[in-house]
Length: 181
Image (cartoon, rainbow, N blue to C red; front, side, top):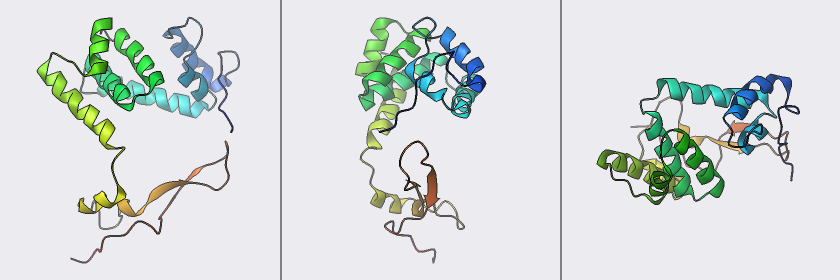
């Protein structure tokens, strides 16, 4: 199986270095990017796009940083992924949550009633998506008369490995809802 290389500041493509330098400055290990950023640096457009999205959420998001990181940590804990739990615990600590609070967030024990309700929705959303079945989408209303999102899905090209690109095509296995009323 192919693996995406883990870059350092020195080995990263030139276009990724300025963004990677900024991320390394915030890294828990001085001078070393976290694994996610080290791999994203292999494709500068991915790293730059990821950071642009993060910046937009930071500058224009409706939740304060502590609430955003509480959501991230709650979803990571619901996903039961040790890497994302550790990473989002670090991010939550940087946003102002202390160690006891991050443990409580991970366990779903939050004292603030409004925050607890928000995190319950985030947790349910994170866990429910795993059990969603294609057949359930039939009950959803049509979004557009010209395009039915339920009849399309993303499939990988037949060429495996780092050159694989997603393609958008209609699978024959997904039943289309009649457009007649």
